[in-house]
Amino acid sequence: MREGCALVTGSSRGIGAATARALARDGWPVRVNYREDEAGAREVVEKIVAEGGSASVLQGDVADAGDVARLLEPGEDGPVLVLVNNAGLRMDGLSPQLEDEQWQRVIDVNLTATFRATRHALTPMLRARFGRIVNVASIVGPRANAGQANYAASKAGVIGFTKTVAVEVARRGITVNAVAPGLIETSLTEEILDGEMTKAIPARRVGSPDEVAACIRFLASEEASYVTGTTLTVDGGLSA
Image 1 (tube, one colour):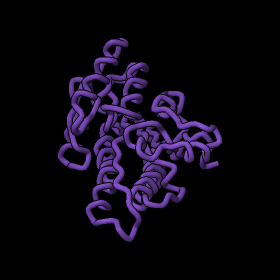
Image 2 (cartoon, one colour):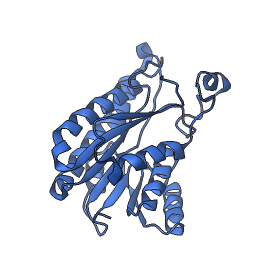
Image 3 (cartoon, one colour):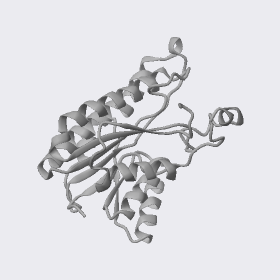
C-alpha cells in the first residue's frame, strides 16, 4: 500500500459512502467528507472501522475554495493519493425558467469543485509519481435530459476535464477517469425514480451505490494503471 490516503467528497451517504467503504477495504485510510450530514459521515466511519479499516471525518463545502484546500492538505494519514470527486448537486428546471443562482450553484459544486480538488491533489501525486483521480459524472452529460441543462452542462464539463487532465499527467503514473452513473437509488434521485423510468432501462431496474463504488474501486486500483482518460458508464444499458 502506498504511503497516503483517499479522499471521497460528499461521502456521508449514497455513492460516496459506498465508495469510502470500498476503498477502505483495499487498505486506504479514507477521509470521509460531508457538508451538513455529520451524523451520516460518522456512521460511515464507524462502519469502516468495524470492518477493520481506517477513516476520519472532514467537514467542508466543496463549493468553497478554502474548504477544498483544507480537505486536500497532507495530514497524519499522508497526502491524498486517491481522490474521488463525488459531491454533487441537482437544481432542476427547464432552461427558460432557470435562475442564475440555480445555474451557478450546480456548476460550482459539480464542476468547479472537481477542478479545484484535482488541482490541489496533483502536486503530491506528481511528487509521488502515483495517483488515482476518479470523477463522478453522469449519463446526463452526453445524453439529453429535459429539465437538467445546468446539471448536464456540469457533468459534460467533468467528462471533458477528465480527458484533458488525464493526457497532461499520464507519464507521471497518475490516472484520471470518470464514472457516469445512470439511475442509481440515492437521495439525489429518489424523487425521480418511478416505474415508467425503470421500464426504459434494459436491465429493468435501478442501480445501487455499491455497484458504482465497485467501478470506482477498480479505477483507483493498481490493476487499472493502464486505464486513463476514459468514462465508465454504469447504467444498466440505458445509454447503449
